[in-house]
Length: 304
Image (cartoon, rainbow, N blue to C red):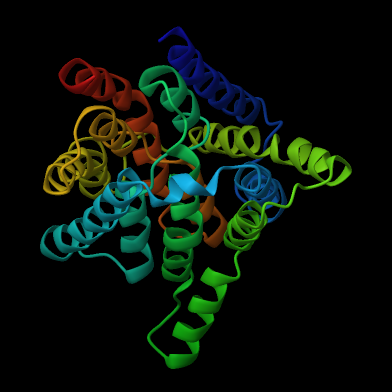
């Protein structure tokens, strides 16, 4: 459990560094801050995804745990869309940002230590990561990029989604892993170094964004809805689907813990890159990162 707390401490510390640097004027607001997100989006995060997926075991992709997480993710997104239509109508792109914040979990810098030290097995994390990058990310990016209802706009959004660097990196990494080819060290090592910059860049930009409006100043209802769905709704859906599929023991426990992970910083990175839904994505990441620890401790007490 100490390693899990260490993982959370790392995240909060880097966020605090970004906030302090913005407060001192080292990281400027607006365009200056967005440069951190763009570097992560176009270079560092794809390198991180490829280096992680290309060295993974593809046999775990057929686990029912991955199926439970897939169904829970999609169902939670759809539930957010329904609640948005009933309670707080927003533009298509803004609603997509909220839907992503409610269901897109942090499978890397929190998911890996949680899986390793709470579940005791990191087998399911990489398949869950590929599910996000290869299936959910294209849909989310296409939605954030949607500029209208014309066929040209829709087509451009779909192309943007499936050709996003993180998506291409996930497909390439999976192809390499499935083929059994071992990436040469002179190729893999630079990618690992580049990928290591991804999370710090995103977290510092996230911290710098907190210098502006306080959390829950704007878009309070969408943010609270996304937060509640992420921490309560998605694990509840995963529990129901898990029981329906006959999961129990370690598999059910793993599915619930993964479903309760906080919203990924990548959601904020996508929103900042396309400059839409930044408030709901930022605030949901902030709230779920703080509140997910007690949620996961409760799951561990009941199912661990």
